[in-house]
Length: 152
Image (cartoon, rainbow, N blue to C red; front, side):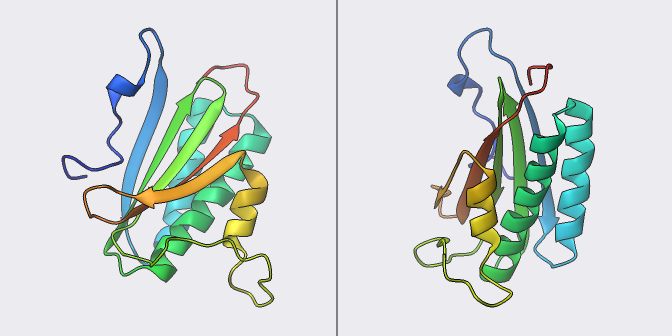
């Protein structure tokens, strides 16, 4: 990941004494990378011991966000960050492409495409997107609570 990337954790954002677990990976923006993203996410969340509901929802969210980045942007790579803080898991996927206006929630998707963000919306407590800030693409993020005894 290049210095200055919008996904590099900003330690200054954390209050003193607060710990967060972070994991970041980059994959080529190819359809085959979606399975790799699910596998990497599953392995890390197993290590973090998230509860089953949050674990499964997070894997599906990563799959949908990486798929959107691969299908709807002209990216060479996709970067995914998982950040576990207190009882929240934040997932962020950065692409290198530009989709005018960013991702859109389509509530009338009748064909086999267009339902990914509906799933993200249903599974997460919040989600959104923003420009990476340095002109390097867009970041789509989602948060979900988890009820694990271990505070991430």
